[in-house]
Image (cartoon, rainbow, N blue to C red; front, side, top):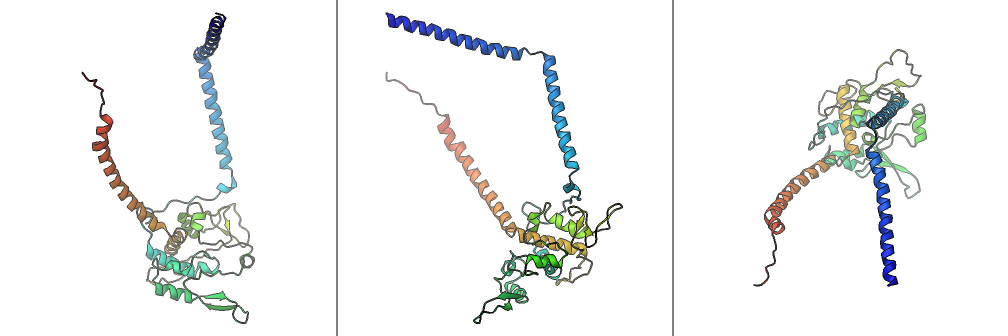
Length: 307
């Protein structure tokens, strides 16, 4: 009898405590729901004003940064920009000629080997001839001496300087960057390279460039240590294409795009194959789902007891 009484008391106390908690919470919720419309409007206005002030402060902060003083490049209509468009391999070959005759005097491409040219811009025999045209440091020989030998397909493009210190000394303290992945390392990619090579001009009024530097609005700060390298007819193409400054800039930009992304064409080819394969698989899956599983999912199982 005592045990039954205790259980009854606990039940009553538990119900009363739960009722008080629920009543307290519902009172809070009802207070929020009954908040004055004017107060809600004031809070919303304060949120809008605060957000606008934060956005304005961020915009003003970005507008005065020194890194944004360069001229941003435009997007040019490259032939390889399409979803399934490949690189212009004739342009890659001409771009290699521009690099070899103009850019290689200062810039290295230490991650590109002569064998990478085979099947892209040159035949195997042509790539071997290009490799044999350079002298590669090798050794030691049987007498422990270093020597030079003609290049092979497995050799990488030679560096114009023995080390970075020699490169800086030959360029007034500026280190010419390696061009192997330059289009991936610069915002704008090939658009930036083309704009930079064709963007040299006289500094505007009020802007002075110290001796040894050149004005280019596409370079950060406007002053660049590299002089203008591309001029009309500064070289001749082997295929007879007119070697204008813009043509050479376009070709070397495409060449550098390929150097940074040699898998460009293969990636798009695989994407096309994947789309075709998954489209076929989707059709088969839809057929199975519609005509096979729909019957199983929509069936109704009813139990009929024996009469």
